[in-house]
Length: 78
Image (cartoon, rainbow, N blue to C red; front, side, top):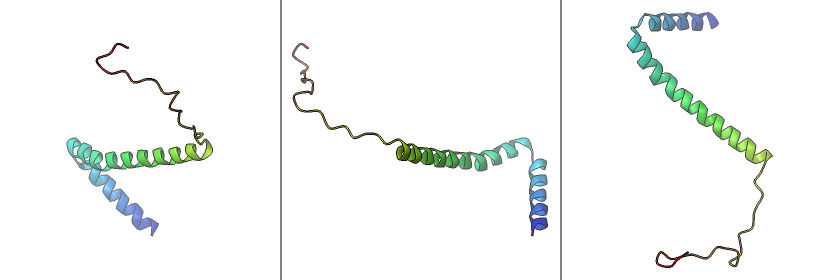
C-alpha cells in the first residue's frame, strides 16, 4: 500500500518538476493559496475560541441615562 502511494507521489512530483515555470507557479497558486487561506481561518477560529474560553470578557452593565453625554445638534455650539 505504501509502495503504491510512494510511486504515485514520485510520478506526480516528476510531472510537476518537468512543467515550465509559469505552469508550476499557476498550479501552485491554485492549490496552495486556497489551502493556506483555509488553514489560516481554521487557526484563527481555534485561537478565538480558546481565548474566549480561557479569558472571557466580563459583562459590563450599560451606562445609565444620566451618565451618557449630551447630544449636540449641528446648529448649536458645543
